[in-house]
Image 1 (spheres, helix red, strand yellow):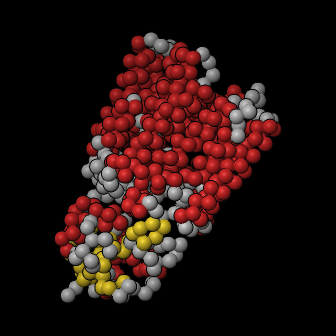
Image 2 (cartoon, one colour):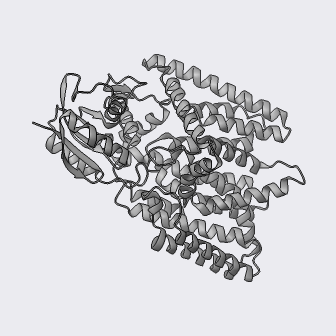
Image 3 (tube, helix red, strand yellow):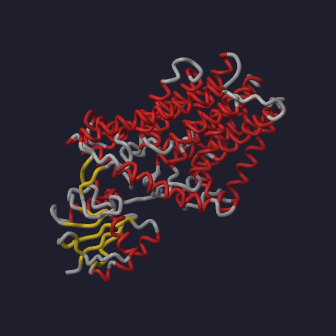
Length: 542
């Protein structure tokens, strides 16, 4: 499975960077050149200030940026060099998922091994996990492996004299990103509370406080020594928290809005992986109610619930990157149930039926579903697709039941989940467009080529950051800055810092953006020149 995963990622390594990829890439390349995450960001909003082209890329503590900067220094300023930390992080996620599933599964070593293999396979086959390796961002490449490692250490050393190492790891988590470690710490403390392990609660809180103090002290020293703005990550995070609260508020407006907010994550994770995880959670609840005995599974379930409640409806340009942590958690929770069914049915006939389910699920996706739900942003299966999967799942479960296979439903769901993940990831890997941010976006190289051919090297122009990143002229204004000015009626007369803006090369896959520019740019003296995939080039008249 790891080999298939790496193949699915590596064949996409050359795809152009999209949207936020560019901001992190610019910061990392600045580190490669100068040692500091300070460079051209295209007059992007800097805490509401649009007056500086060169900015600090300290939206979060700079640990991840320095890792990417080191990667580009070693392997070149190429898509591979920029994405290599994500690929390494993906391997770490697979390994740590295996180790965590081993710890969670109760039974002999053979059963633990089977559960660990199932969990790793379910995780690495998830389309969200595959495509997240291509995203140049913190959440998958660094934050998720460190979070899984923290959980593993909680199980291994949380009740030993070595528990202070949790404080060091928590500090490292804060160095990667300051938001997600908080629900992780709260989940561990709550798990210990449910177990009536008061020492565990105390150790968790001390580890959190100690890690926070260590992070603040080291960040204060480093930022002071390198003259970086100490408060910038905190200011950016406070704005992001406010934005996340507003997104969550809309999701909690009604049960329907909450369910609708979950749909993108469900399809990206894999609907059958989600159902399988829910079945396992319900089975665990049935065992827990009559005899209260909190096990390691409950820690993962608590964290899973916290992340779902915190990140419902939250994404980045249609891509639910923040929810990628749900994939290994769901897989680990479900793995013992699947492994138990396999153990009881370890003969060639049930294995053949389950394998046929994987192949049939793959065929349904290849021939019927494809990636229409992501391209059209419906995030639901069409009626015929849902019926096909319902019939297929029923057929596999009935076939297993006729063979007197215990627990046929988990096996059937696991087969559907693997088939969905493998086939959907294959469809996305072969797609000639972006399969993460701005799903379906085409035309980035063509837009960059138009800029090179029509914009003088020292001229000022507006462009989507991904097209500008590939183009040679460097004096670009981020398209998001222009759209913000037009949306809020801030003064913009077609000039910037005393220079005339000669062209606008805009991403227009979002209909609202396309309509806004089509209405406002002509009155500012720009005429539509050409369509380049999902990009439109406007040239100044005269």
